Amino acid sequence: MSVRAGLRSLELDGSGEAADLAAFLGRLLRYDRAAAVRLQAHGGALAVFGRPPSFDVLAVRTARLTGTADLDVTVSAGELLDGIEESTGALRIPQAVTGPPWAGLLPPRGGWHQVEGVPDAEAMRGVVAAAVAEFRARDEQLGEAGRTREARDRIGGDIWSRTLAGTELPLRAVHAAQSLGFLRPGVPVALLTAGTWLRLRTPYGSVTLRRATTGGLGALRVGPA
Image 1 (cartoon, rainbow, N blue to C red):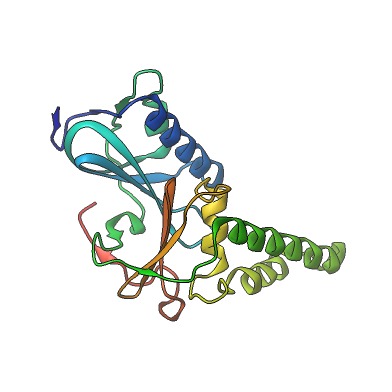
Image 2: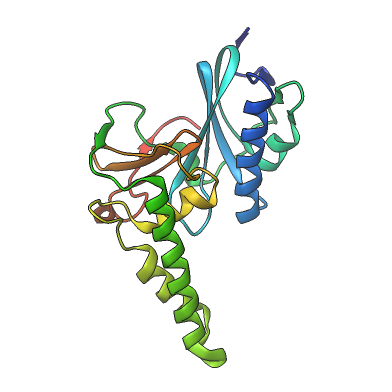
């Protein structure tokens, strides 16, 4: 099968690929019911990019296709989820939308180098659990009168801007990976760098962001949306 830009369907490689993609889209939609995703299909793989609010990262989920494809489009995440037929692996591609600014800005495809000495998945999950517990404790200490949006944002900013031990990866990226279902117990994890970019990769997906010195996503690489 060969799919060209403008053709409105793809065939995922089985029900497992379809179910995993559906789960990813469902998690994005919990954070933003109006979420958009950018789709890029090259050869036998589909990459789905999304940006869950509050984490300040790009999330990437890939899926295998039954054939080759050539597609680059930004669509509604909700409509894409509705277009998944899990039993057959069929994926209906919705009409393109005018995407948010991040949809025209992507991390590099190549040039990634692995960072050694990164904590394993269990250690990362423990760090996230400890950070969540700290947030809850500090939030409780604010009391009813002090629990304003600004005060809670300050606490969150303090906690989630910290870096994972021995790395430059902010904890918000680890939290995003767990919240999106990427950081599962026992899975292999890798931290990679490419220029000013960082990427936390697992078999279930990746989160990417610019190094802290560039301010979150920063000046991303511009590409057609």
